[in-house]
Image 1: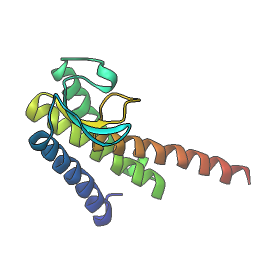
Image 2 (image 1 turned 180 degrees about the vertical axis):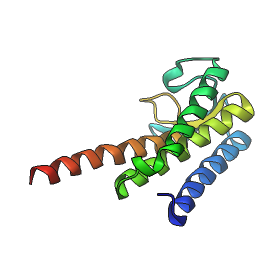
Image 3 (image 1 turned 45 degrees about the vertical axis):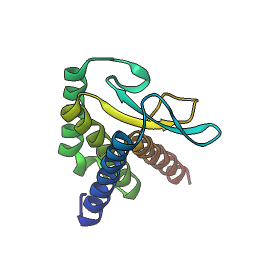
Length: 149
């Protein structure tokens, strides 16, 4: 499943996520957002919880869940990755989860920086996780369509 091209994609997504988080940490303010255009700004947020602020301050729990998730997905990657869409989904899930997990382990919080006003502030790892879920949903749709016709 993890041929060299998937490993390169994983490392590229993880590396770009960590690079953007480093940039946000060193360049953005926690007080004043940098408005890119109306409805989209960049602002530094130290997220000590999970999505939408749940499990706030539960670093040990969130790290344990992250390590368990990454470990299980890695262990079962061969049986889970049956085609291109599921392979891409797994790579995205692993890269996003690893990026946020590394922040939690090293800093005690996740660095978020994208503010679009509709959602809590988020980062590239969150987008990559959502993209991975999207690949799995697309695989379900394609598989169902192929099974029907």
